[in-house]
Image 1 (cartoon, helix red, strand yellow):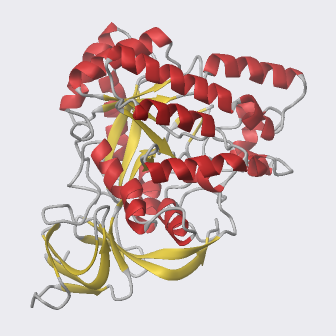
Image 2 (tube, one colour):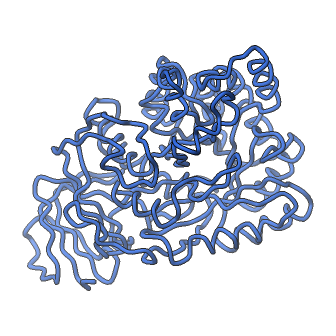
Amino acid sequence: MSNRTLITGGLVITAADEVHADVLIEHGRVVALAAPGTQQWTADLVIDASQKYVIPGGVDAHTHMELPFGGTFASDTFETGTRAAAWGGTTTIVDFAVQAKGESLHAGLNAWMEKADGNCAIDYAFHMIMSDVNPSTLREMPKLIEHGVSSFKLFMAYPGVFYSDDGQILRAMQVAGDTGGLIMMHAENGIAIDVLVEQALARGETDPRYHGEVRKALLEAEATHRAIQLARVAGSPLYVVHVSAEDAVAELALARDKGLPVFGETCPQYLFLSTDNLAEPDFEGAKYVCSTPLRPKEHQAALWRGLRTNDLQVVSTDHCPFCFVGQKELGRGDFSKIPNGLPGVENRMDLLHQAVVDGHISRRRWIEIACATPARMFGIYPQKGTIAPGADADVVVYDPHATQTLSAETHHMNVDYSAYEGRTVTGQVETVLSRGEVVVDRRKYVGHAGHGVFVPRGLCQYLG
């Protein structure tokens, strides 16, 4: 690894600024920025970024590597998933450690630490999925915060698997309110959805498209509303994951207008895909089964608007890939048995750059929702999410003029299909540095498993 790297001639874009600058990196950190050519810096490695953007590495705050789900496992390991993330210009993931029912939070965290340790191409952190809220696990929450795991995910969906009832949710929120932890919520009314699933299957409605029809937008909005009111009662902040529907955005906007510490995340699949994909013939729709589900196209405008007005603050992927052959096919004849999840960790930065090209968001907003805000939200800014003296040298040289066609033939995720197959986008990652080490060099992967390290997180930086 070069001790001193200089990136010259590029347009440096952060959430706050766009400036032509040379970037000097030493011992894995950004040490200085200067107007082009004004400093006579010498370096072991010089990267020419002329006509390119120089942006912070992406922070994907919602991934599921190796997640057990529906009798199978997400097809990306920490090794393959973080390598694909690097290819896509993401240099930090925040994955989810899972507490098994009857087990402690620490046991779940340790199991995920072991999965990731020595296998990651980029840096990683963890949230904690609480699937069994009880007096013992509530007592563990402050201890996890001390270990740098400061956010806890609860589910209003998936009865019998991850589901927590309102009383359990309220208790966890009360602890979060007292300790500075952040509750992340999967907001769908799982009890009602299970009734609709049962009724649909009884009518012989078994195709993938019915997955979207039973998981109604109203039941996402209702759960979002309920989560917000419970958080208000508990005096707790709330982060609602994978918001997909106009009705749910409206609930978040209402809460934020009251000044409440309520935050929302959406994902590229909700911005670029729709129920048209779920309805693709010959069981192809199974490729697009995720929860919350894809919505009719008309919801997309509300999501873009929410990103522009900051009623939605973060775009993460919810990357949870299952191969079509042998995994998604488990649900042939019964949509409720299709493993829920889409691949996307490699595509997020490019799709959001396409949104810049299409006029949905500005360049700085691109960096804000993909890098800076997730880093602040989950307590790792300014170490991650920006290019500034003292920050980790997680830096991407991005070619805004290149075009590429997204395809399973060319992606690096360990999954046999692309959710964006055949879609042409403008913009492509050229070179990626993680803590100053080049992991993608002019479209060639030169990284290695074990470079990535665990990043302990502080508290959400939007609170206090």
